[in-house]
Amino acid sequence: MVKGVIFDLDGVIVSTDDCHYLAWKRMADEEGIPFDRAVNERLRGVSRMDSLNIILEKANAAYTDAQKEALATRKNAYYVELIGRLTPSDILPGTLEVLRELRKRNVKIAIGSSSRNTPVILRQIGLESAFDAVADGNQISRSKPDPEVFVLAARLLAIAPVDCLVVEDADAGVEAALAGGMKALGVGSAAQNPRATYRAQSLADVDLNTLLR
Ligand code: G6P
Ligand code: MG
Image (cartoon, rainbow, N blue to C red; front, side, top):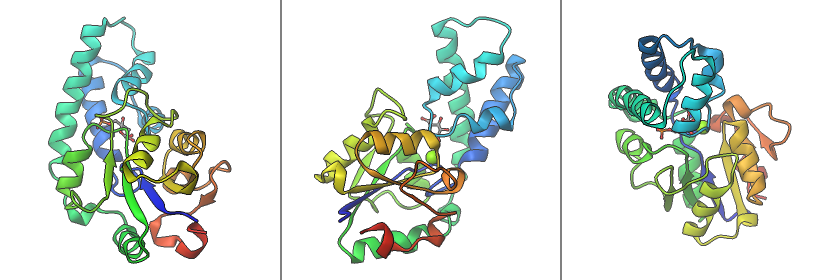
């Protein structure tokens, strides 16, 4: 029986893909580093610094750690500017209905996100007090596919990993859930992931009776 559902944030509850893309693109253009949507796809669920390292694979120059910090900080400033425009209307289809139904069934709900901007995003979309627990990039040291963020979320919920279901749009997130001993529902970009326990296009297409078994 599933007693807790842990939601990834970006790409599951709200689509911030474009904000990440535009912010990285602005920074990469300024630095003369080739960056496109295909590279952006590889950044899903990956931490900020790991994302930068992927982008720098195409850079001609070598960057010191201090320079990398500065690039990541600059990208984040552009990103924060963009997510400042998010509103509750950006919540992805099906999300609010699923959250409401889980509450009704006394299933605990948490966020498990690599993003250090999680508190800002939750505030922007009006869900800052909707969850029983929030585990995010500010509290962890290893990013997905390491299970750290989901294990922390389960611990905060006081629910055993085996009784948790993770909802993820990133393949790295599906792996993280499985590595943590949890079930995984793949949505969006992970909707075809054969490793996921369950698959759906979005939260608007799920059957909770099946998922919570
Ligand atoms: C999420 C996104 C990633 C992003 C990461 C860190 O997992 O899917 O694309 O790199 O969060 O986000 P942050 O807001 O901390 O830069
Ligand atoms: Mg995601």
